[in-house]
Length: 73
Image (cartoon, rainbow, N blue to C red; front, side, top):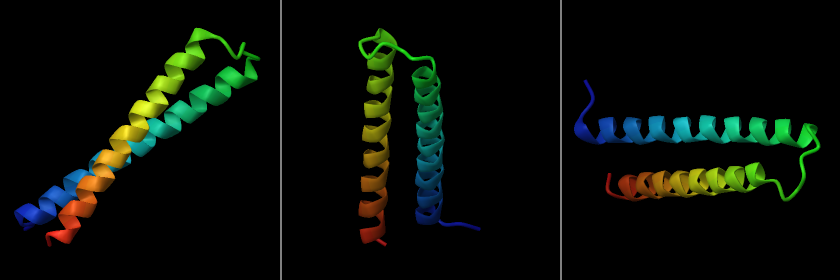
């Protein structure tokens, strides 16, 4: 049986894995758009950029939480 600290770490790891999967989906979407010779000023690219930045911020937040949590073990 896991204690509360182990459960928290597993939860953060699962969150990080989900964000990595989301990042990979965004990469595939970008590749798909690039293959369609999309205009560099297309609104879809701007929206995709926003999603990449949001994903990056969330990954950094989770990693910081994991780092702080690890220091307290």
